[in-house]
Length: 149
Image 1 (cartoon, one colour):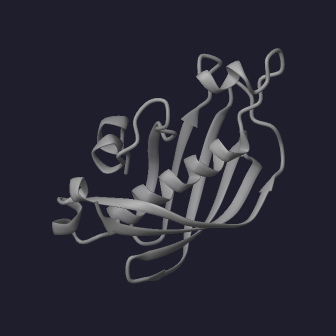
Image 2: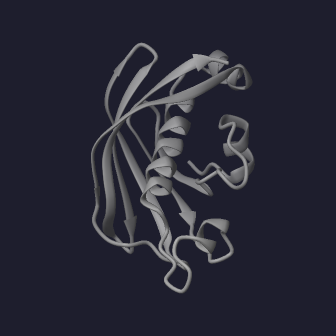
Image 3: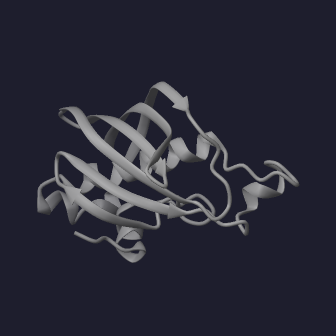
């Protein structure tokens, strides 16, 4: 299943410069999601991180993985709850075992692969990995909760 940026914006409240998922390329509701972000030099974060040596910040990679997980959580809800996406929001609860394996630079296609580890009610726990050219560049265990706005 392909979810484009217009559909992503119907699910996530984030907007430029903080919407960090460009497209979803695969989703198995309740199980996994794959999506990506194209990293470009025109992003404002590169003005300060770092001039002359642009590196995409690890916290932005973690946030992008969390946003992809949020899309998975919403798309895994019953259809009547999905239709109420404008009244709900995903709150990021925790980050565990975060590791950064390699730098991400302008021109990279940052691929997010998120797998559900556990779900209990509104709380989701994800195993999240980010790749560039099939190489893991970051990974973490993320926990999030869907709540009313």
